[in-house]
Amino acid sequence: MMFRAKEGDRIPEASRRRMPFFQSLAVAFAIALAFSAFIYVDYFALPHIAAVETLLALGAYYGLLAAPRRTVLQAGFLIGIFWFYWIGFSFRYYGMPWAMPLITLLFGVVYLLYFGVLALSEHPFIRAVLLFGLTFVAPMGFNWMVPELPLLHSYLGVETWQFALILIALAAVATLKTPLRFAALLLLAGAFAPAYTPPSPPPLKIKLAARKRPVIRPAAEPELHDLPSIYTRNKLS
Figure (cartoon, rainbow, N blue to C red):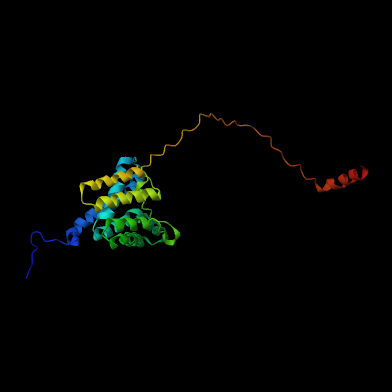
């Protein structure tokens, strides 16, 4: 016997957030691509546009804070592939090209588990705390994943306190259900970091003059047949 929810019945939050697998995968792909865009802008030698990269970084963080659990796991898997696919390429030089896709999948699984920590809760503020905590995780003594890096070429800073402000602002937008929630984005002003402009070199004109330096050669060693005469001169003197 089937029961249908009557109008006015409260549908559980988990049911409302559930989405079909491929729709979830498409959202996860968008999150991972936004999180990794700065890498491929450098790879293809494209110009960095601060406004675009700011929006992509904010969209990626918001997705990680607000997406359903399964979507977060899928996004973590794809981020691991987008960031570390190249590590498997070195195995071709060891005569093991068959290991290349396995290494790529391995990194996908590792970062599925890494970002899977966020799937422990669906509350955006708890996820914000967990994502902030991941910035201090350094497996094997090396920080392979730096969640602040998508902000590198944006209008926002990459300092720890600036990253905390960004996560608080996005978690507030994802949690609050009133139009006033967008006022939390004003916190992003505190994370603003003007683009670094390298100083122009001083107007110095330096010319390297080519000079011929005399070559000083060591005195020749006396031959063996000259030794008696040298000894005689020293005795007479």
